[in-house]
Length: 86
Image 1 (cartoon, rainbow, N blue to C red):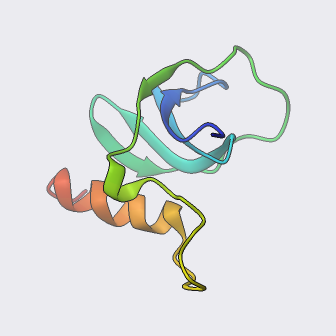
Image 2 (cartoon, helix red, strand yellow):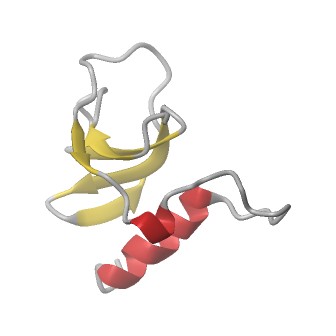
């Protein structure tokens, strides 16, 4: 399965960055606070390390029967609710 979940930010801009299908997304986390920050253009500064896998109910399987749910948007909704907002 491609990388999915919270990984160390390979750009060293934030503590962690959400990966989906092996690609860093705009979701970033510092000291358990989630924010939006697009990943920088350019190469990684370091290899990302897995910090936290997504819960099973957020894991994207690709077998959605034709529904178009963006897993990054679903994760953003989940984390913004669970962190009490921003």
